[in-house]
Length: 386
Image (cartoon, rainbow, N blue to C red):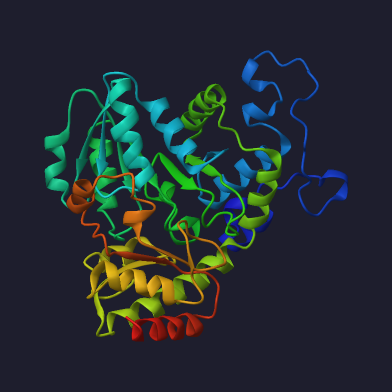
């Protein structure tokens, strides 16, 4: 059966698997070998070697990820930031310019502000919801536009369709960080994005036990990024490949549960008298609700909110809750809670966070696989102590 004819649940299980199965193994074996026999390869990058991302574990993952997002090819990396940096350093060089939506993930923001200037790469942040303003950011040296499917941590949804039109009109590569939605809720290649980036640490793996990344998209671009990655050395080791491979097979079940749980929790918080604001695009009151409904099959398991008592109330809530663990990251089986100002976005200055709308008292809740009723009960009990 053609992979493209399978539903996504089936592709997660069967796409990319070796045929015939290796020694009959139902689960993909771990190829814990750094190097492989020379078989007459004429190109250095065709040699079988872990750093070149072409062991059997890598190849199976690449095929599966490409099939899941209905894209041409994929590449796994040692972290989400390895995926981001290798992609941007492939497409951009000294003197080039990048346009990005504002309110980015803190690690991406740090890359732009601390590493790009010394490399001579320039950038402009734009309002993802104001496409009429984007042409003013264009330069003759602009090479790409960069979006996030759902922004971190305010959960805004940029005008992604306008982003594709803008990129095509000006000959730019269109890149999106699809971590927050995952392939279950959004498949960027079907909308026209050239490249989709993931922190595989999050939903793709789903068990909080590895760090990984992925780039998915056009084959010609993936090949170029793979060569850059081989030079930078950010390859994923075979055991981590195995764990990511295993985690992917339950992705659909996990994300759909998290979609439903997060929406239920967001509605509970929105109605609570001690909550000042809730950011979740699945809520009818969210400014990007209509766009999220049009683009996505679900809005993911991450929501953020502010309490009327500010930082003190937020810290009391986090300290009092019994189920969520106070930790950064997201997409795992356990719920995690944090203040982004102290974790994911602590690398940004207070002024930069304020400009992005990230209040010091903002709380981010990454919903896991616990019963949503128990999480709501836990939130209610903690809010009573605030």
